[in-house]
Image (cartoon, rainbow over all chains, first blue to last red; front, side, top):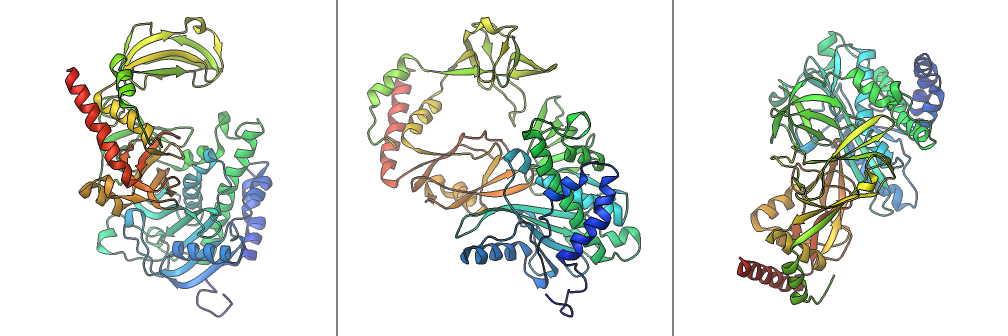
Length: 311
Length: 218
């Protein structure tokens, strides 16, 4: 998209993202982590190509189309390609849940070529949530928390949601993760069915959010947190262990710092809103990212999929 | 997939020894301490979500971290390798064997697993059919679902990442479903058992024969 077309002034270019990371995010991270430049090198592919649209039905569908068109031409789609749109006409969440995507929010999809080992790939969902929560805290309010796996909440309402789906290209069968994101920024109104559970950042902070700036911050933090998966994987494979305190994975450490899930009374289910299974108390986030739940009979369950809501 | 099956031989085997022998091996390297004795009865995980652990079998300690390992099946400790007690073992070292009494349904499934094509779980995760297939399975049974290589019929759900699982194997109909909603499947364990439509009479014959044989024993 060129300047002058709808959406061009709202969304940054790949070059602007790269410059933002070097000028702002790298110095920020370097204050707390000596090897920050290495992490950013691993995550540099995030946002290597940015594709903006005024309106799409769904960015995930556009990602699938792009993968197939590219494979059809005997090429590979660039890992880290981000597709955004000012509005989505047919957006939905997991289990075909309603997701309202009018103008004012950040709606998009990141294409990630599956080059992580299974043990690292399982943390992708956590990394996306951490990146968003960090961005919301930096730009808007520190009163935002992560609810396992990666819901970002403000005042117990959802300000952001993610949908991650595996996908294999139709022609070359390349394996991708499509990371869909929806972040309520300046959109203030929600359909009736979402009013009790959704909130936008502007509602919380009482002023408009600079969408261009937020997009830069969010993608820079995605670059860091996804880069961290590769960085920690490489450390572990080389026998150096993870770099978090006590030898824990740095991403898990950060997730715990941003989350209020441990200790909560929750309802758990594969589809917790339509088919809740049981109530439990959250004991801890385990080393593999699973949640340890204690049931009322005292027994514990480790859950690696599904979702929770707070009671 | 076996075309012919010697019922008499298989049934005779199960008649004379209606048990599975499940080896219990060290989950990783470490110092083991056996917590059961030969002949002890052990319980499998129980509860609605299989959340109540089975009997504790052994403790394994690595770098001061100790872990209690519990039984995944019910039965009797048939054999125990006492020589490892209190010693360092490598991952995979056989520690004991549990003799698990087979139920009629398990015998049928064991025999069917020799006849069906078993499609395995690619990762330890939870699995579910896509909505339209789940609806068809519930209303009309799994055998109304045909699969061929490349079909996307199951979704793997892990850490809120949903990945379509593409069927690879012989085309046919889904005869057996080995996963349940909400319960994790170990990597490599079968998700579905598939056979060609023309094999269905053979399958039915196996089930009828085992049921009749088993009921005659009672």
